[in-house]
Length: 271
Ligand code: LER
Ligand code: MN
Image (cartoon, rainbow, N blue to C red; front, side, top):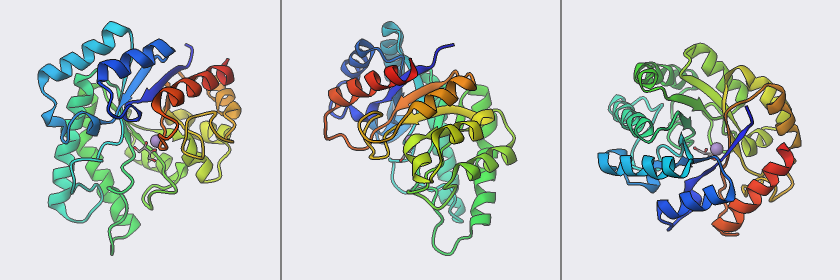
């Protein structure tokens, strides 16, 4: 199966969803990844009708809704590893809402990034946070399985002290030992921890369910010095059949240019 390309929707700030979907389809993307905060402050505020409308918009265009990321940008006050049971329970309840939103939109993965909302709170220890995070996901996994959604734990070395590296993400996946909790490679993060991109792919291969494509400079792939050739070669070698999804953090060149140049580069490199 050929590798599919997607793009994250928060880049299209101020666009109507239908315009963003149509634009990325026209460029030739296969999928779109949704940041829930772009739809509403809370997932529950996205009505049943709106979920159907969004899903149909994508289906009518032949665009796949890959899943969700930037899960906890809103609402405020949530945290995944805090020793405060009530905050953690609220966060878990919100993750259930996100699982339903993801499944209602036809999405199959949820990227567990949320660096700020998983970092150790002052006074906590890594080991205690680790056990809480395991219990947190253990409670959610039956619903994830029922809804056919897979959590992808994202290593974020420059943004968080909890699961900062791909090795730690893999260790977490192995300890959880559940098909609906896997990992992913975020390119700027792999570069950030000093991994070669092929090395990152081979390391993660048995658990690799998603890829975020971004230059180390936080622009789109091909818009800086990061060479994606080793990534493409390794993904082909392991017969990766998921999405490579463009995720940028510097929107200054404009959504149109970023979306177009990123896909042109990926197509050239993966050809
Ligand atoms: C944050 O840098 C990131 O890569 C996002 O995918 C977080 O969800
Ligand atoms: Mn990412």
